[in-house]
Picture 1 (spheres, rainbow, N blue to C red):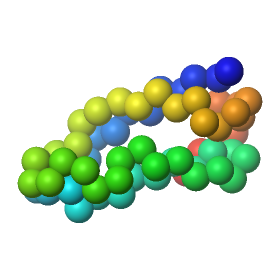
Picture 2: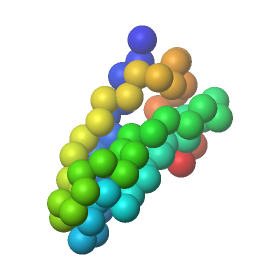
Picture 3: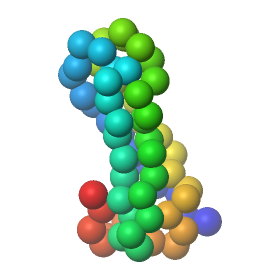
Picture 4: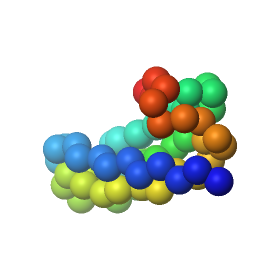
Length: 62
């Protein structure tokens, strides 16, 4: 299993407005943040992604 670390830093007044997705090189789309957090300010967190299978780190990620 490959584990990727994704660090997210987004300045925004209400993180509950945000949908943050990662597209793996194999085309699979993973929701990292799905409008949670309500009126909290700024999204600064890291995610460990395992759902992309054996996708190589050097390929294109979106």
